[in-house]
Image (cartoon, rainbow, N blue to C red; front, side):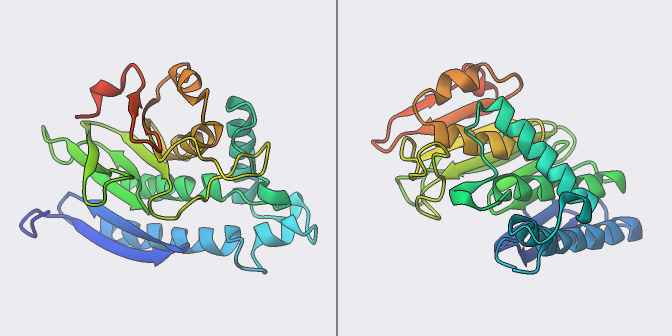
Amino acid sequence: MSDAVPGLRHVEHVMGSVFSFDVRVEPTPALRRALDEAVIHLHRVDEVFSTYRPDSYISRLGRGEIRREDCPPEVLEVLRLCAHATRVSDGWFSVVPEGTLDPSGLVKGWAVEAASHILHEAGARHICVNGGGDIQLRGPAAPGTPWRIGIAHPLRPGELVTVVTAHDDLAVATSGTAERGAHVFDPHSGRPATGFASLTLVGPRLTLTDSYATAAFARGEGARSWLEGLHGYEALAVTPDGEEWVTTGFHRYGS
């Protein structure tokens, strides 16, 4: 993006990842305050939900030291959304990996979506918030100009498997092994999911798009038919042997 394009841009290292903000509108004091608020929100999410912090609410809740009623409202909201994702995915999304309470599969997407909402409420209409490759877009990049999001090929470093084009609000989430190795587990067997090299899901909002992408990746065989029945979502998958498939409506976004 050229520096000549007016807007707010910011990169924040938090939650063990890199979050970037690209707000393509003339900066105003209100928008700058909103960006500060969005960044503060991300750090608050890390403090509350990090499973690496023994003093976080989610760690203490998982150890049974406190009850749900002792937690701030956002913990109850996230656990409710996790329960929804578990029901919709027939149990392939799980908040309990290897016996430990861990809603991380939903929290990052939820945090990104909330950050974009803060900016949108402040008047921004052309927003891209990217949390470690999981993206919430609001509006086009500019009037009449879509966002174009490159999706890295999981088996060919430096190449793209597709470019997602978005003219309006859209979330893009990718689960895969290229960056972090085998980190998605089959919640039923406890073994690493190996059915895909990557799976990219597009949908309206990142909270559920991210969790459904994780669930589909964990499901492996059978994921395609489940995703075809998931209203409002489309997917692109790459298998470990390099084969690709897309759901019926993915052509509206991919190129």
